[in-house]
Structures are given as C-alpha cells and as structure tokens.
Amino acid sequence: MRKPLVAGNWKMHGSRQAAKTLLESIKQGAVGISDIDIAVFPSFVHLQQAQELLAKTSITWGAQNLYVGESGAFTGEVSGPMLVDYGCQYVLIGHSERRHVFKEDLALVAAKLKSACDVKLKPVLCLGETLEQRKSDQTEQIIAEQLESAIDTVGIKSLQNMVLAYEPVWAIGTGLTATPEQAQAVHSYIRKLLAKQEVALANTMRILYGGSVKADNAAGLFAMPDIDGALVGGASLEAKSFLGICEAAVKEFKEGLLS
Ligand code: PGA
Image 1 (tube, rainbow, N blue to C red):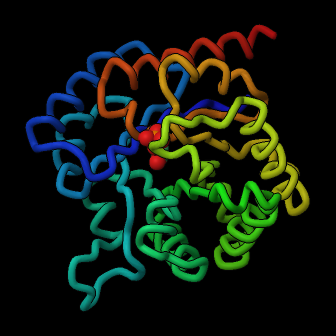
Image 2 (image 1 turned 30 degrees about the horizontal axis):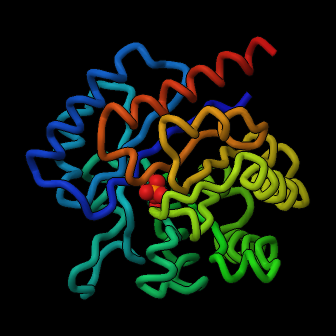
Image 3 (image 1 turned 90 degrees about the vertical axis):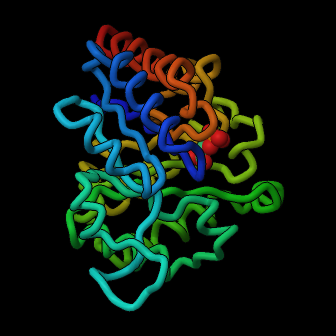
C-alpha cells in the first residue's frame, strides 16, 4: 500500500506573518495525523520559517523550484544545495506554471531534475496537458513525452526517490477539477508507462493529483486506486481547507487498509 502524500504549493503568496500563521496552524492541526505524509512548499523567502517552525514535526517542506548546478553566476536563481541547507526534503520540478509561464522546455526540466537528484532532494515531477492538447486527444502523448524525457536524463532508478504529480493545466487555479475518472485514467496510464520499464517501481510510485483540489472534492479523487494524494494550490493557503484534504486522505487510506 502506498502512503498518501498531501502537499501544499503556496506559489507566490503570503507575507512573513501570513506564512508564520499558516505554518503554525498546519502544525497544530496535523498533530496526531500519522497515516499520511504532509509537505508544504512555501516561497523561497519563507523556507527558513518552515525550517524553524516545522523542525521536530512530521511535516516536511520543500521549494517550488531550483536552478541547475550547485552555484554560479546565475543572478536571481537558487540552487539545490541552498535548499538542502534550509532542510528541504522536496522540490517541485516541471510545474505547469514553470513550463508554460516561464517557458521551461523538456531539456531544462530534465536538467533541473538531475540537479535535484544530485543533492538527494526528492523531486515532485509535475506532468500535465493543456486544454488544447486534451481536446486534440494528445493527453497520453504529452504525458509520455514529459515522463520519458525525465527518465532518459536521470535513469529509471532515480525515480525511486521521486513523487509524480499529474496536473492537467486546464484544472490548475481554474476551479475546474478533472473528474475522479478522468484523473484515474491518466494516473493508470502513467503507472503503465513505468511498468514497461520496472514493475516494482510502478507499484510503489506515488502519483499525486493536482488541479483545484478542495476539501469537498478530495475524497472522490482519493478513492481512485491510482491516486496517492494531492498537490494543492489555492486550498493550501488556508489551514482549515488544507487539513480537510489531509483528513480526506487519512480516511481513504484507512478504508483502503480495511478493504
Ligand atoms: P490549484 O493549484 O489547486 O490552485 O489548482 C494546484 C497546483 O498548481 O499545484
């Protein structure tokens, strides 16, 4: 049985005070939740607060991005070793906002993935199609290209240390969630792609769903056999809704153990 992960991607939100309040509320609310993993992804400038407030809890934290290499003349960028210094366990790679707003291509995403693996950060590699691609029946092709480019660069074994997140671009921040069945179909396809290379990895890989996940639609998604948690944007900015999603994951996990 795969342990669910619920991850909050805060994006470019929050003041220093707001980050403190949110971290403290999540910390309090998560006491006693042990059946799932919980992670938060604040902005770079709030990572130190995460490190201070979440140390000695079971909640982990990560960064939303990194740049390739260990150091260098790259004004404005942050490297993997810098994130490790702030206690990050995870880093988001290939989020659709990076791919589409910041025009990160397959090669750059793959290079970032490699830099994360080099310093033992766990990448959460995001995969997803745009609305046009879905409408023209290209979803599987796009997902396969994104995943295969990653595997070609870091090697299939490195995926053991990763989490995948299926995030249809059309469902991110739009209020449009993929139905549980739509999401399940893609998650199962991703698992089949992995199984072609390594069956054991396909069975253990956590594949999160992301795209307008809320406390009231999470249970339906988590009930699907290949959905192992969520990457949550908007609803992770409020402790109550984020914890509601965590509780839905706990419930599904427990029911899964009984069935
Ligand atoms: P959303 O964002 O939950 O606000 O749709 C998800 C994400 O971008 O990770």
